[in-house]
Length: 339
Ligand code: TRP
Image (cartoon, rainbow, N blue to C red):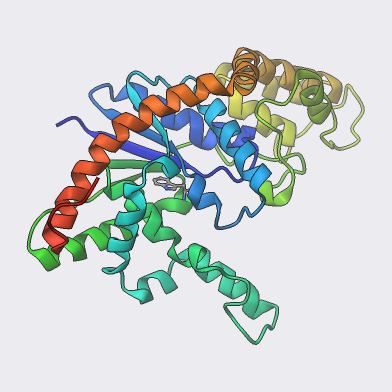
């Protein structure tokens, strides 16, 4: 059996450089390197619905994420690429799993805990105020995504490791109840990336800080964003500190180690901020420009993207149906009438 690698991306914003460096690029590398493996990559559009309640935005972001994966080089022959929403088996499995999930386990899930903590901090009398049950059940839906495809390895960022552990725990309880290895236990693989990529203001690049640089911003906009990064007021020839320099960290996230060392020397010898900005812009632009063209092409040819997804979804559903049939049988939902 080839190793199955599975990961999903939630379309809650326009993909930015941080997403690329920390998630997209390493996940694609992993899929490429382990060529004995089957990779499943999907758009977790129904996960996004827990927080995105604007229809136009949800639709647009889902399309952007799909185009991003393809533009970044996802091989859709070697891997299966699909939208979570087109795999209805996911939602049936979600229900079944929820009947094996201790509520206390969900109380301890970090996204829910953080939302409650925020309410408590605000001094609200109702600690669950504004928290929808979708957010509460989020880890169960993610478990369904993973367990439906018998995934071995789930490449994720550190913040998602707890969710993969939860999937293991639910699968273990399910198997234990029926005294059978029905569900396959997955493992998280934390994606290694260079140090957190800084946003425009020097904090970690994150949609919630509004400091992101879109991965495929038009060239001129991209140049403006880079040139707008605030630096200290050292004169052009003065030596500069790499420590704490947003531009240096950004450059380092994309450069080969030798180039980074050259820039380090240039800082010590006194390179102007304008030159640092130009170098950073050129480096990143040279890495993304071809992909940006492909991205723009795909966004204006969404029918082509849709065809690719439909093909992936047909393949994914064959697997999903097999798992769900196994699960229904063992829980005692038997007989005719299933699609
Ligand atoms: N929760 C993940 C995130 O926010 C996205 C996701 C949904 C996912 N289902 C998944 C990741 C299954 C890996 C496997 O990043």
